[in-house]
Length: 443
Image (cartoon, rainbow, N blue to C red; front, top):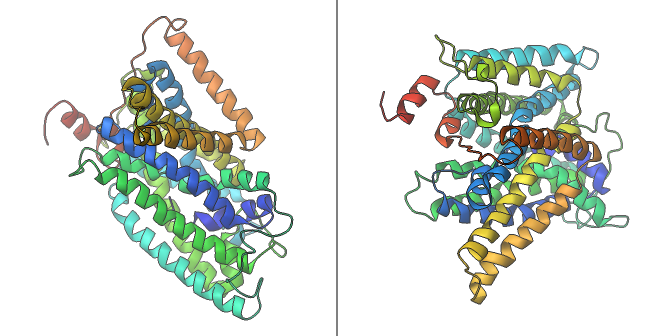
C-alpha cells in the first residue's frame, strides 16, 4: 500500500465512476476489511505461514493451493512491472517528446542490476518514505483547500458531490472499486510476522488497523481531488493523473516535489518487489514446486543472489513500455482477488465445516456470516474486472491448471507445495544466510 497510489489511479476511476472516486474507495475498503478479518482468523491457525496458497493447501486441498499460488505468482511478477509503468508515465509528464521506452529500459536495468548485486536495507527506508508521502498528501490537501476557497471545482470540500450526484451508476462504482483495490494490495504482508508477535491478537489487529489507516489516507486524498476536479476536463493524461493534479493545485515546484516523492517510493517498491518475486521463483525452482525449471535456482557465487530469477523478473518488467496502468493493475487485481476470495472461503470451511463451530449466534456470525460477506464482495469485485484482465488472467489460470494436471499425472499423484515464508520475507539477506538458518545453523 503506497499512499500516493490514490492520485495515480484517480483519473481512471473518476472516468469509470462519473466522478465519485471516494465512493469507490469506500466500497473497496469495506470488502477489504472483511477479508482482513479472515486473514486475522487464519493467522492464528497457521502462525508460521501467512499466505493464501498455504491456507488453501491445508484447509481445502493441495491442488487448490497450487492454483491459488499460481494466480498469486501473476501478481508478484507484475508488481515490479507496474512500478515501471508508473515511472514511465511520470517521465512522459516531464519529457512528453522523449521516447518513453528509453526510460523503461534504463529504469528496469538499474533495478535488475541492484537486485543482482544484492541490495540491502530498502525496507528500512520504506517507513521514512511513507511518512514523507503522507506529509506531501497533507500539503496537497491544504493547497487544494485553498484552491477550493478561490472557486476551483465545487468551491468547497464540504459537499456530498464526491459521493453521489445525478448520473452516478452503482455498477460503474463497483467497477471503479475493482480498480482501487490495487491501492490496498500488500496489507496481507503483515501476516508474515505472525510468529514474531508477542500475543495472538497483535497481527489480526495490525492488519485491520493498517487497512483502515491506509483507507483513510486514500479517502482523504480522493475526496479533495474529486472536490477540486469533478471532471477531467483540462487533463492531458488520464491514465495517471498524479503529476497534473500536483501541478494544478501547487504549481511546477510542487509538482516536482510531489513526483519526486512518488518516484522515490516507487523505486523502493520496485527493489523490494523485484527481490521478493525473485526469491519466490528461486525457492519454487529449488523445491521443484510445480516443476519450475531448475536453472532458476542458480545462485551467483559472489553476490549470493538468485541471478537467473532476478533476470527473468527484469525481462518481464521490460513489458512496461507496452501496457497501460489500468490494464496492469487489473491483472494484478485478478490474482489478488482470487486469493482474497479463497482466504474468506478457508475461514468458512475450517471453522464452520471442519471444526463444526456453527451452533451459537456468535459462531454463526463469525464463522459463516462474516466470511460469506467477504467472499461475496471479493467475487463481485473480481467479476467486474476489465474484460482483457479476465481474459488474460483466465489464460494464465488455464496454463497453471494444465501444469497441475501434468505434474500430478492427471490429478492422481499427490502434490506437495511448500514455500518458506522466511525466505520470501527476508528481502536483502543473502540466500546463503537464509539457507543456513533454514537448515538449523547460524551465521
